[in-house]
Length: 241
Image 1 (tube, rainbow, N blue to C red):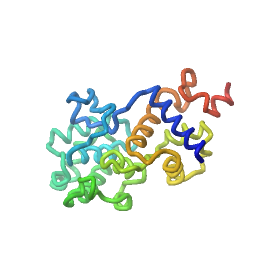
Image 2: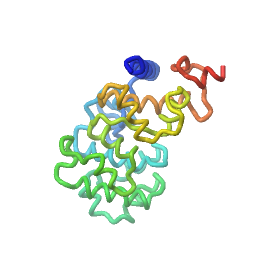
Image 3: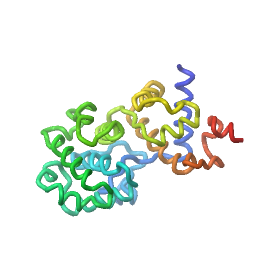
Image 4: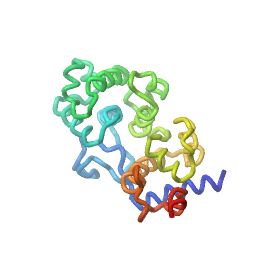
């Protein structure tokens, strides 16, 4: 187990060396502010979010990014900010039909408006936007339209909980590395990361973000193996060489 754990940590370090800190989860409302780039990424800083508004912005983003590109989510978040919708109580005062118009760019906007309303009802409860009293994973999974990936993104990025987020990129990359065979459940894949990486939110944060970056640059549906920083560990690369 120790050698396998070292291999996982080594992989993490190689990805971080190749791509650098990713600055997730971005806060578009802070774009251009000190410590943030033009997209709201805060590379190398793990102090964010530091306010209920920031945490709720991440919750909104985690729901809106389902089945769409982040650029579409940014447009929706900007329209919500312009409408003065930054906290749960404000969302509860807006009809779902009006909310859907604000988030049209994110796709599936009628469904997502209902999801945002459901999340707003939960997070409008006193203290629920504070890290110490945030809802549990089970509470989040009980919300309509919130699955494991969304719930875990909220827990990790909004509240700093040591929960690893599994997405399709994770399965693709680690399938090609030979770690998974594709039959594992979400929870089984997640448990592997929990077992083999230190239970530190910033490591889970960066590992997930680095996986996404690596999938975009190299481990695409049709992989670009030239220059891949982890090719020496990759069974797919070895088999195709």
